[in-house]
Length: 346
Image (cartoon, rainbow, N blue to C red):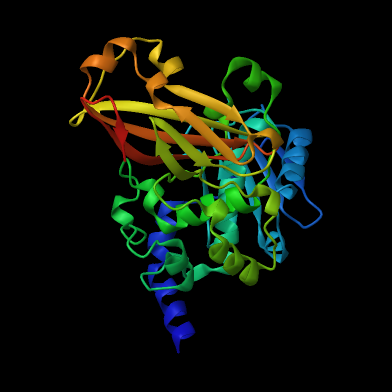
């Protein structure tokens, strides 16, 4: 009975779902590649030829997949930019469309959006009810019962995108099963590691990379195991003593952490000199020598003139990225108070 209701709801809502990603067949492609599974890779821009489409297929295979791969019909690359999205997926035709192919003309530049759109294909194949206005085990485990997943008329509203359950599921797929790469030497040299890391679009939801019950559920329905090497945990508060704050981190090498400290007087952020970004952010790479702990002297995050005059609060934010996979996270941890006694308190 429950399955019948789900099917009826899917049929009823299908026009709304399709309106999110309209797909119109255009036979005027400039290049074509057909994979052994029968997936058509079609290019509508001269920047993507047959050889590059074949390489895009190989990149698609680097995303973990199962029998759902055989139901994917097409992957299309359009040259023009879409003002509202970088790609879309049509669940009725099983077609992925990637935009901005004129400018994004490398496999690397398409890796992230391809994984995300394939995540939609994955979700509709294994858990099609994730888009329905009903309570499901996935929604309960994900804490997504109150998201805007059914407010289709608000789908394009700025700020809402990350709260729709289809987008949450697709982003979960990217983090749990998507294609990865090592952090580039260029990003390390330029200090752009955190800028270019792959993280979940929705930073407000619990970290899917350490949500074991949710992972077990997705593994059960798909038959695909999550690689434990992907797991990245949010640092845990250990203690605060003499203005030195300590966090517990993963006892695993090659994870780069950056803690940032933003100071507020009431609700107003304190403006500080440009060098604040250097004084207010502290980066650590995990090694066996860290023993799973990181300690920071909070007094070092204050400018000298602030130490005698500032009273307010400090918001602590952490970023973490695995240098082997480029997967990462960014989370607001909590706020501390700083009083006239020059002490930080939680």
